[in-house]
Length: 152
Image (cartoon, rainbow, N blue to C red):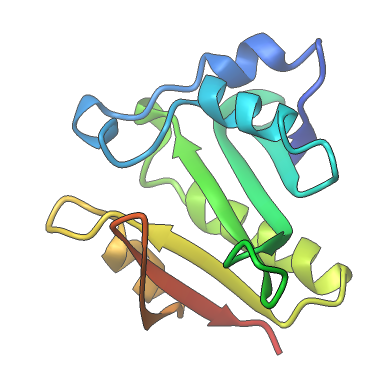
């Protein structure tokens, strides 16, 4: 059974042991950086989780919840901040499951949209996100394409 588990001292080593394929490393930060970012946003903005399949670690996902998108208090958004599926576990549906779990968490908190950014290009995850129903917004954030999924 696929589950998302809170990162605790007991799951920390498993989470930081997740490694994407070498050709993907330019497109997604390592789990250690994600956990550091979660630590410096202690106000509940970050939602980091270890993805397991029958207790076996297969990936890591981190959502952002109600962030100040423009840094001026005018727009709050929630979405997928990081998705790392271990190189040996890709193509088995774990990424799709993680995105669906993030969508469920955002809905549970009253959200109606799930945002994500991705590196553009032929080796990027655009096809994965578009295949899940995301649409591009026309925005670019930090050189990345911004996509949104309607949760209503």
